[in-house]
Amino acid sequence: MLVLARPGVSPAASRAAVDLVLADQPLLKVSSIAGYRAQLNSAIDQVTALLGALLATSIVIALFGIANTLSLSVIERTRESALLRALGLTRRQLRRTLTAEALLIGLLGGVLGVAVGAGFGWAVSQAFLHDSGGGPVVFPVLRICGYVALAGLAGVVAALVPARRAARASIIEGLGSG
Image (cartoon, rainbow, N blue to C red; front, side, top):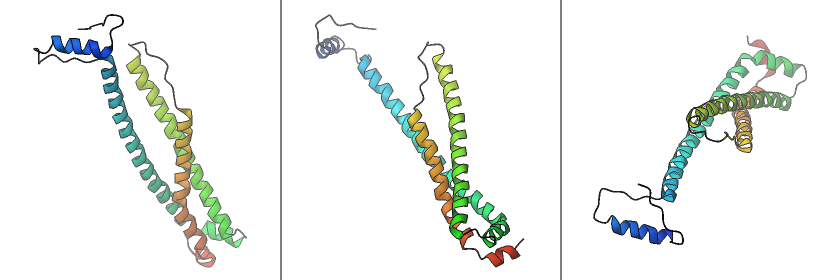
């Protein structure tokens, strides 16, 4: 049942009057639009926190995946790296090359992840909002760009150990492998 207060009556006075009338009805629950809105906001905040935790977990997993991929790449290209070093590439340049490769892998993964996530989010929101005639879907562009940059940074962090290992490898041993 919807109860509207008379004009000029405060919300607190209206609530007190309704509570007084329903005092002998323990099975009836009284709520306000503001209370309902706060309840919905609380549920949305919980889902957002859960999604944030899942995002953090996926970033950690991606960090290990990128490090693993780069480690395998460094091992597979030991001879190539040694040849480049023998031709004059410095250790620093080799580290930078591998770090740039990791940055590109991270950025590409971030962009693809954002594209799939945005498409999925748009499709789900259209499915839920279609019947209610809801408003347009808004994407937080700055936050999304931050996530893509974070993916690139994760790639760079993941490349530190494999790049250092590749740069420290002996040229002679590297040329002899394979």
